[in-house]
Length: 143
Image (cartoon, rainbow, N blue to C red; front, side):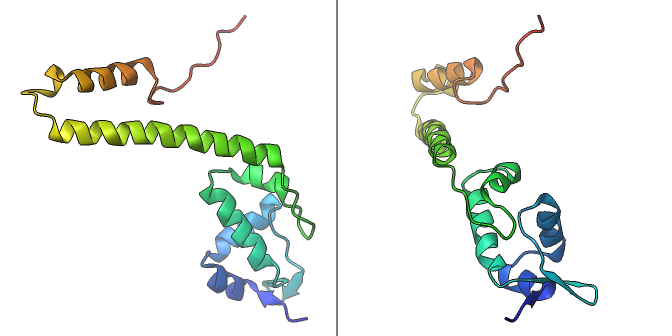
């Protein structure tokens, strides 16, 4: 079996070697040995890196991804985690769509001033109330 050294993996995955070393310390990937000072990887690491990239693109943290990937082990897809993330994405899409529509309206609104526009005023109220995700949630008060 031909192993890939870290430079080959970096080139094929379009990730810097430093990211590959970081992923290894996080337990996302595992090297199979060394050739001199260079880490060697099984060619299957490229598929694992693609899974990591997919997880990151979907908004999963590396800590969440590590729960699904065991170095040199099978992928354990937590379907509940996937469904929860899909729900979060739906919520984000709704908020972003509302924001986009509001910006488009504000750009084309015939009102003399945005502050005179009822639609803009509703958007302003939603932002002030935190309904648009613009406010950070505060931790509960200590007991």
